[in-house]
Length: 436
Ligand code: HAX
Image (cartoon, rainbow, N blue to C red; front, side, top):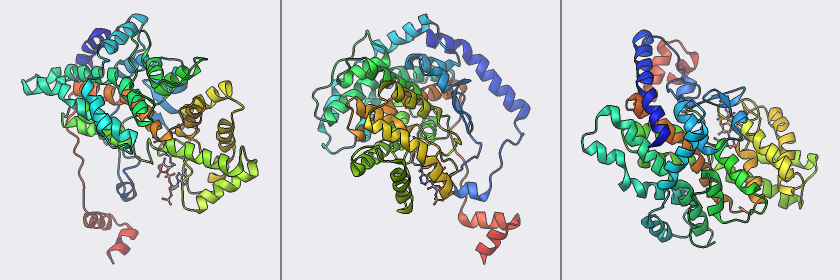
């Protein structure tokens, strides 16, 4: 399985040893406390998971293995996957080896196309994507080897084998979904001479005379690759994988979480919002009109898509990277200009309203406008692009967790009555009045 496998095999004993030592020496140390608001509030801020592939710093954004994402934006997705898995940037030989590993596994089985074509025409592309991944579960090397009695210390190798197969095939599947869903024609074949991101762009079949569309897709693949362990898709994938369900089950489950409007689906909502603005004002509105529009949105009880974040408290550096791309490639495009003006107006309005903890744009605020520019106008497809990229993070996290022997996830839930009793015992006045 190439250089990546070799490097992980070298790292495995060291990493396992490190965790054993940490638990032996510090097992009883308290790292997080949980209050009642957090229990009822989606566990926000509770530290109960380990994820070494990336961290999201509230004031810095995404940091992959110590590298702020802004420093990685010129890197190929292959390099990013190697980095996520090993904590090291690959040398050219390791990149070539990974490229080969993907290439030899890239053929999409015919039955996947049969299944996708048999789905009703109004099936959401994310449902198609998740179904396609799940349909390939029959190929899982992990499941086969587990049933043959594989040793625990070999789990990660079988997981890596499944991860490579899955990642190899995802651009082809995702591009095929685009073509089937939009009626653009049959899926296009994989080109072994192109890198993972460029191949995906080519298989979508959209014109790319300047080569900027493939640059955009590469950038897209790199920027969305991972976002630590507690977001809905990563956590879901991790939890399913922790039951030793193989990567096909786990990644498919993660994609179902990504499909939610508060998570990955937000990018389609964002472009929808921008196009509403364009249509209402017949072009780029004035700043005052835009201010009014954002206020109207808030007053009608809707969220402004693309703004706010559960963890971040600054402009998402991934938004900045897309914004820079747009400023370079299409500064005068109407849709991009609206995205740009929204960036100048919306944070101030959200601050004035005073509800959101993070008034700044997140990754989804600008990516859709760029895809739209290149003719990828079917925005219900956008979350699939996000999913292809995020599979890099999900797969690397699965491999590392099997390598470390991370146990099954099983936090303790409690009943509301239990909370009232516990909080009352702890002397909370709010809980005392709830009891009355
Ligand atoms: N517009 C209007 N109101 C917003 C808002 C926004 N963009 N973001 C948050 N709020 C509101 C919340 O609805 C909440 O209101 P209530 O108290 O009435 O329930 C209040 O502000 C506090 O929310 P928060 O603590 O700041 O935000 P959360 O951690 O609860 O939620 C979200 C984070 C990303 C879900 C949220 O900011 C949101 O809905 N944003 C718009 C949708 C979006 O852009 N999602 C993509 C996020 C990036 C991502 O994960 N991509 O996959």
